[in-house]
Each structure stands twice: as structure tokens, then as C-alpha cells.
Image (cartoon, rainbow, N blue to C red; front, top):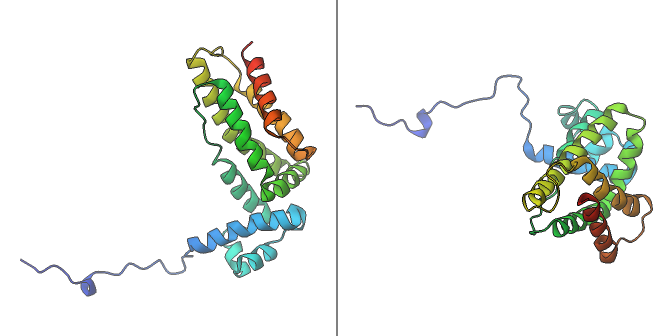
Length: 205
């Protein structure tokens, strides 16, 4: 019977020679720097050098992860959007819609989001690849929440089971985005109550 090997006897695993070891703390610093740079200077003026400087890392650390700013943004922004919104379950469609509007309004008014979203959407008009990625990410993230809310409402008998989730998302997001992001006007509780009532009325027909 042999003795258990001591820690000094255990084989030491080493990364293959030449393999890049990407530290997660550095990656997180770069991710945070990307959003800060987007908010500060916009996509057009954003550079890999600026991201590295803001993250406190060398340029090589950024280039080891992304070859340029387009794949970087294509990777990070959809990933954030995919986190999605919490799915409300208040017991009524009106309550769920109202809660979705509350959460969405707060998200759109966040200082970073208020700077980044309009800028990226403007850039998307010049970059089909970016535009497609943003469209898919936003629709998948928010569309999944909307579909769940509609399914809950249909199970309660509040709306028909074949209610179109795409139409519901348009009714929810369109007016809110227009008022908050485009017009930059207040959208207080009374406005959100009225919109929630109108959305539910439209979906219940």
C-alpha cells in the first residue's frame, strides 16, 4: 500500500507553451471601459487605444480579445441586451405591462444607456452588420419577455392565445422609446398608466 502523494509530489499542470492566458479581471475591465468610452465619445470616435487607456491595460490586452472595435461591440452589446428584462408576474396583464414600462423607462433613462443607445442606432444605419446584430439582440431579449407575459395573460383568459408578440412589443417599446430617447421628454407615472391601459386594450380586442 503506497502513501498518498504529498502536494509536492502531485504533477503541476501548466498551460501549453505559447498559449494566451486571458485574465477575467482584465476582460471585465475592458468591457467596462468599452461602455464608458461609448458614452463619452461615441462609436465613431472610440478607439482600441482609448479603450485600453481607460481600462488601464496595454493595447495588446485588448487586441488579444478582439481584433477591432466592431467585433468588440458586436460581442459585448448583444451580450448585455441578452440579459433582458425581468419577467413580471403581477397576476394581471395590466400589472405586468405597467411593470415592464416602469423597468424599461428606468433603463432608458440610465445615463450610460441614454448616451449609448441613440449613438449605436445611428451608427447601425451606416453599418449593416452592427444594425443586424443590434436588431436581433434587442428583439430576442425583449421579445422573449413579452412573449412570456402574453402567455401568462392567455393562460388567465385575458387575451387570445394567438396574440402576436411582435405587435405587443411594438406597442410597448415604440411609444416609450419615442418619448424618452427621441423627444427626451418626461414620461411619468400618469403617462405610463395611460400607455399600459392602451396597450392592454389593443391586445384584448
